Image (tube, rainbow, N blue to C red; front, side):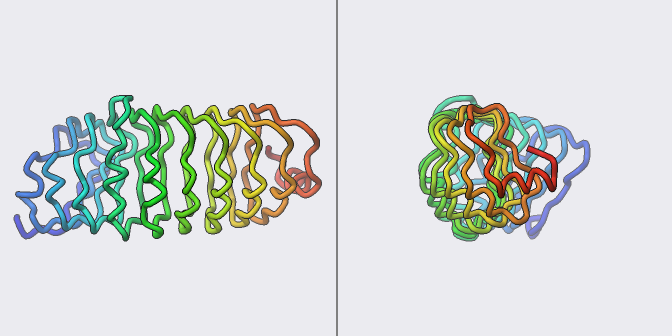
Length: 255
C-alpha cells in the first residue's frame, strides 16, 4: 500500500489512534481525510516527514496533545484540526502556526474548538496570501489580536469568536476586501468599532456581540449591500443608529 496517494475514511465511527508510522507507511500520501470519527490519541509525529501532503483533515474527532512539527509540509493547501481536544491551554500551543508560513498555497486553516491556549502568534499575518478560510474560535486564547491580518487579502471567512481576546479590533481588518463572514463575538474586545470595517462591502455576516466595545456605531456600516446578520448586542455602545444601518434593520429585522 506504499503507493497510496489518497486515504479517506471520514464520516464513520472509527475508533483507536492514527498510525504512528504514517509517513513511512504512505510515503507518497497527498490527501489524508479522517474527519468525523472517534479517533483518540495524538496526531502522529511522523507527519512531519509527509512532505507530499496537500490536504490534512482530522477535524471532529477526540484527538489530544500538541500539533507536531509541520515545518516541512510546504505543499499544504488544507490543514484542519478543528473540533478536537488538542492543546494544553498554555503558551506555545500555537507554535505550528509559525511553521506554516512556508506553505505558500495554503487556502484553508482551521483549528477552532480545541484547548489551545496562550496568545495568537504575530506570524499569523505572514501566512499565505491565498488563505481563504481561517477559524480559531472556541479556544483559550487571550491577549490582543495581532495587527497584520489585513495582509491575508484573500480571506473569505474569519472566525475568532469564543476566546478571551482583549484590546481593540485591528483597523487593518478593513483591508480584507473579499471577506464574507467575520466572527469576533464572545471575547473581551474593547475600544470603538473601526470605521474601516465599512470597507468590507461583501460582508454577509458581522458578529461583534458580547464584548466591551464602546462609542457609536460607525456610519460606514451602512455601506454593506449583502449583510444578512449584524450582531452588536452585549456591548457598551451609545449614540444613535446611523440612518443607513437603520435601513438594514428595517429590511431584515435583526441586530
